[in-house]
Length: 138
Image (cartoon, rainbow, N blue to C red):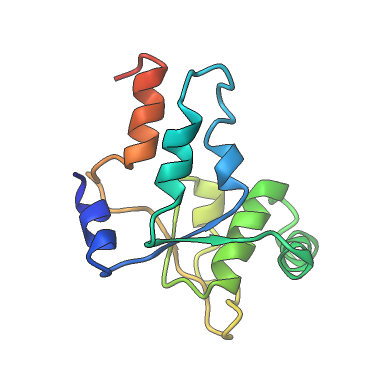
């Protein structure tokens, strides 16, 4: 089991993610053959906080796009808004466009959002690892 999953299971970390991730995990290949139950089981862990996309979050994401962050794609804006509303300690990404926003966005609590790359080498996320295996890439 990857170290991140063990840390999450022990309650050391919590993973906050937008509910759109339930669908987005299959965005690259809808015919990947991934078992729906496995996806549901992965997101049904106590250490994963699913944040609903509601009017408040949508308004926050739209404001990000309209006020100095106009280059954001809608889904990226939703993920950033999710992190800000959930007041996460760190937002992890490998996307250089999002990494450039480190310290530029206020979280709901008024502090700046830290945007950084995950520790490398990092163990693969269990669901992503399964998706890649299902596509014959591992």
